[in-house]
Image 1 (cartoon, one colour):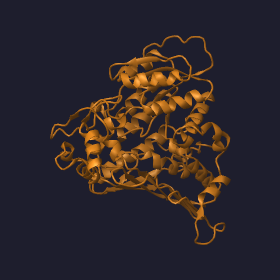
Image 2 (cartoon, rainbow, N blue to C red; image 1 turned 30 degrees about the vertical axis):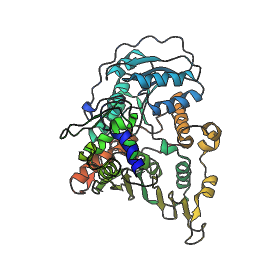
Image 3 (cartoon, helix red, strand yellow; image 1 turned 60 degrees about the vertical axis):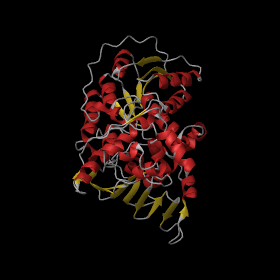
Image 4 (cartoon, rainbow, N blue to C red; image 1 turned 180 degrees about the vertical axis):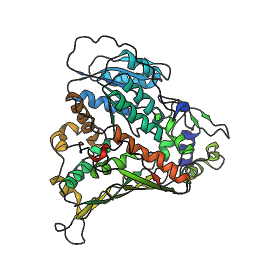
Length: 466
């Protein structure tokens, strides 16, 4: 225990959270009005390659770069960040591919606007801290970028969700939420089974984000700065980028602040925004204990962080009602000791899939009251994207799903198709955050889901991974 305590003190004596990464938290949640685009420079001779730009140059950016450059016919025009360290790391990473170095935009927190207005892109990928996803997406769309890929969650508030929809509709730019779990092999096989009717009419879904992030939220830094009563934590510049901004959300918010890994695949199975939609939500949260206990257990009762009041309940449970009658339970749990799980459950009138335990049951084909191992079913119903791209995806991040996701987006760009997961998906999935916070603040009251499609959901057809 003493060794654990010393290790924790070494890592966390500097801990805190807040400013850094690519952005500052001061503008979080604000409605974004991007500067009017300047006249763009005339492009040089077209070499036929898709032109990519990246805003935010942390580790997530590197994974996207791997896949963009692994797929023939793409090039990186420019990158942008406010920190020199991540920029240098990204330039070294790109150099490994023996391709020309991109132009670098750095400096002020609005430097991304200069990049967007001075360069021409076919696609810009945004991999910045959460509070900057919407300002940067809006700016990219207003600057005329045809396809904008935004990391998850796409938005934090309902207002931000509407910003994404309104600007995408007004500009014609395709906003794609980069939800890689939708491309997870088992999720795509389960979707294939749903579409082929193996589970009958879908009744219920379960999902979530259950991931012990306590050490992620308190990792290495070089100085500690916390003024009692100020609310915010600040972490030193050597902290892992994620901890530099992520943990403040646990200080200030109480809701499902990271819903899309779970809800995305279930939404596809239920044709959300395409013949079905989310109608209402009710959420509740447990007391907040996990982060405080982790600090005390590892740093002692007198550690400065032991004085911080964490608002996020350890386990947040949201129940959603859908227009076609289905229910969905979404769980958020990042402050507890537990193995990782997204808790998928897709259940219909003829059977179900549960990923915890790798279970499938199909009435009339499985032995009565006995689970089948999902592996054999998923081999049979493997999605064609995985069947055709398995070897290329083998070395990619997150078990290959990052490659499949980028391949699908690039296919849409080259063929001028709609984004695989569009602004309406980004808004509906991300809205769970704001709505759950609202419901919890009201004692679990039922709150209505906005119809971000403005009625189009009735006639829109499924398009993801057909």
